[in-house]
Length: 250
Image (cartoon, rainbow, N blue to C red; front, side):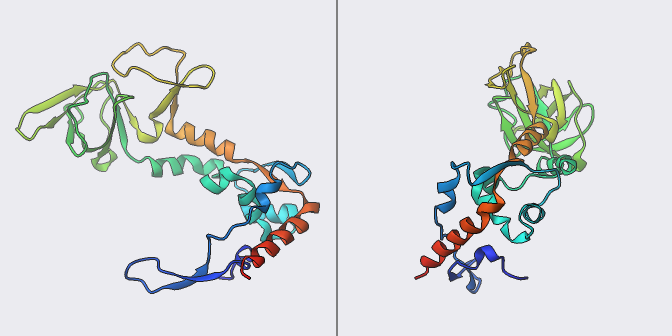
């Protein structure tokens, strides 16, 4: 595979990717010049752009500059996509969410702070579903459970696990769902994070549950809003960037 033009001004260094691996030659990714940072606040250099669902960095580069070589400018100009990655196509979000959050989430109003520890084997008394607790979210009254065969518990079902001394501990659920459809947090009408009392069944109706998949969709929409170099500024900016990078090698 050909090396991207973006990396050509970088020094080549020997790097070990593992204790037992032989060193390989690669670009020195620690090199950096702040030229792009200096022009981010200068609107004469860039336009605002909304990424179309399914659009790739190379295709956008070709659309704007008639070359696929300038995709790297999008990442240097936009901290949010450099940190979080390029937005996912809209029709791929749900499948991505299912892979990222593959477990079940049970919700209860009972304080389980001293019970149902991570690693405990939980059985549904009605459904017979068996699973292992992999995470506890006490602020939301949630247990994240990896169930056998991804089977589900029932809403309002009683679940139980056995303590080391052989005693059987039970708890009634108020809700059960796929992890990707479970509430990540609650917001008020103004979109502000809002704490809830998981032991109170009277959560205000004005509080809006934001699920994991909905939070992903919202973040994905934010990632689509970027700035791009104006075509008439591209040559001067990228030329100066490459010149400064080469000077670092002297």
